Length: 196
Image 1: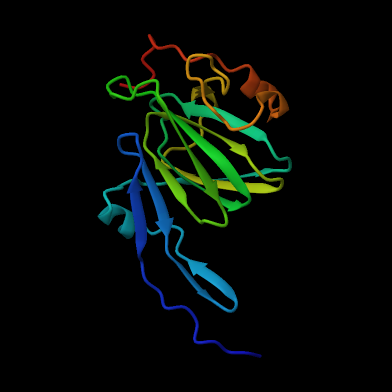
Image 2: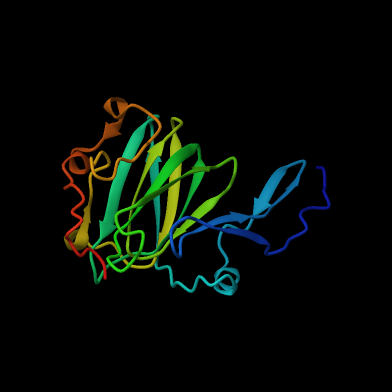
C-alpha cells in the first residue's frame, strides 16, 4: 500500500459574476495528487460569505445516455420557485438560463455557458429563471441542488427553440434528443408576469 501526504484542504472558491444579475459562476478549488483530486463541491458557510444565502432542500441527478440530449427549459411557478446550484459530474453541457423576472433589466434575455466535469465549474441560479441544458458528450451526469421541493402542479417551462429568445445551442436542433413534454412546452410570452 502506498501512503501519500494527501490533500491540503481549504475552502477556497473562485466566484465570477455572470452577465445576469445575481447569477454566479463558481469554481471550487481542486486539490490534486497522484491519486486524483479532492474538491469541496458544496459548503453552506463559504457560499453565505459569498452572498449566497440559500437553504437547499433537495438534490437531483440526471443521466443522459446520448450526446445532444436537451433537457428544459424548466422552472417552477411561485410559490414553488427554485434557486439552483448546478454542475456536471461526468461529461459536459451547454447550460442556458432565461431571466423571467419582470422587474429585471434582463427580463426575457438568456445566458449560456459551458459546464463540465473536467473543469468542475458550477452555476448558481436564483429564483426567477428558467433553466435547461444540452449534453455535449454521451453518458453525461448532471446534478443540481434546489431550494424548494418539486411540485408537479407548478412545474412548467418554455420551448428550447423559442423564436423570440433565439438561443444558440451550438448544434443543429434537428439532432436534439428531446422529450415530448419538453417539445410541447409553450413559447416565451413577454407580456406574462412569470416572476415579480
